[in-house]
Length: 475
View 1 (cartoon, helix red, strand yellow):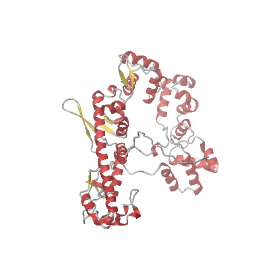
View 2 (cartoon, helix red, strand yellow; view 1 turned 60 degrees about the vertical axis):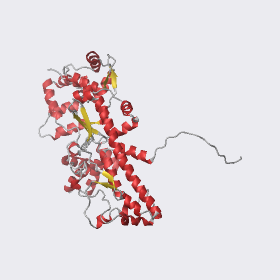
View 3 (cartoon, one colour; view 1 turned 135 degrees about the vertical axis):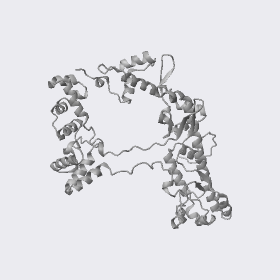
View 4 (spheres, helix red, strand yellow; view 1 turned 45 degrees about the horizontal axis):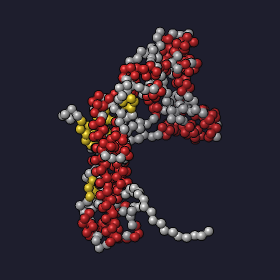
């Protein structure tokens, strides 16, 4: 086998993304909070970037803050021992301030959110410890709580917990009863049926009919076969309905009262307002981001560092990085405004009349209209919200697939869902419409051609049960 070196020339066309392009794409797809975090990090790291945030009071921490942070992936490190000269380049009191300051004066997106409470298991365990439980009981309680599913059920039962943890089954059963006394009577039930039975047994007054419904006729109950249940139990349909009212007051999730409210406040990125001509104007909302600018001291700092090539090159890199960030943030705002303006222009009827008038719209259409790539539109709407006459909506909600109408036009998925909801709300509850009948009504009334499976899919997405479960039985 002969080894040899060869040189070949080849021409090819390749698209390379510069660091500036990559940064611009990353910032475009950032949510407001993500961008705020990124800006704060950059302000701490880059002395040539300034903001309108209040300057910190002078003190030992403030005067030295940031000096020890001048090391990063792009830092020369040991190759630049003169980095300590950076502080000397700035005149006293000239060094730009970072994002530190009075937190009460800053716009904080989550300032109105309550402090997080203890986790569910820790809350219950704390109550158990207060009751002077023995150490082995605490260990059994920890094993039980760790095995609970998100609803608060134990599908494997206390025996499964004991076997998995090598614990005494009688001890686990005893602790489970104790936890039910502390937290919820149905905690650790195997399934929904047992959860209902445990709650009925814990009620101050006996509920024999409701207990019989759950114990002996639970499958028929889930299928809404009330007449059959009444006949089997020898009671009236009215008696069964009264028992159902008792069941409706029970919890289907034993851990519901311990679950934390994970909802986050939504701050709109875009505001859509009516204008004098009957149309709409679009403006960017105050997003809580500080106003950024390049430090006035940057040029003077460069002039003072001309005698040190390494330090001068390092400072130039910092300045260029600051400029890239400023350009990327400005480009993000321009792109977001252009995309939102085009969405409002195309969905004006939706803003006027509501979801039924939402027209089918694809990202490719918006991208072509404003002269950008479809991925740019996708990044621009990611995690962004608009305040509109129809409420605060995600920008992605302005896009929707559609179905062909008998007239050759199209109607959006959201509009079809709204029509399905209206049809079901107007139906005779004693004889609810099947999905096939809804298909026929949509075709006759609205000229919308959809398959039965599509109606079933949309109905389930709306959280509407089947016709059998919607039926209200007469006396």
